[in-house]
Length: 101
Image 1: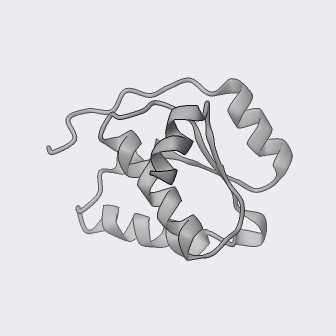
Image 2 (image 1 turned 30 degrees about the vertical axis):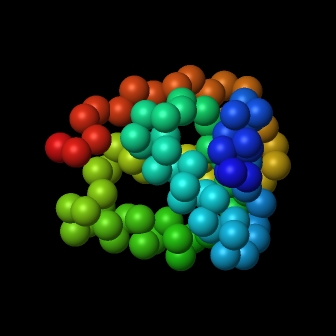
């Protein structure tokens, strides 16, 4: 219910470095975007490469053909606040292809 309320009330999703709940929420909004439930920007403040292991795992999924390469565009890992704000200001929704192909 919390995530649904967050999705209903938000114009964008922004995550700061955090723990297991933050990881789950990032992945959930990415999956919802991939499935076409929203087209909102997802930006993650990736200070000092905090989320690099997560991105590496997603890239590994791409390398092994479990994840489409186009899904790298589901989020923006921002190296700093200025880059994150620029991304949000210039965001244009992307239309993803067939989700199960």
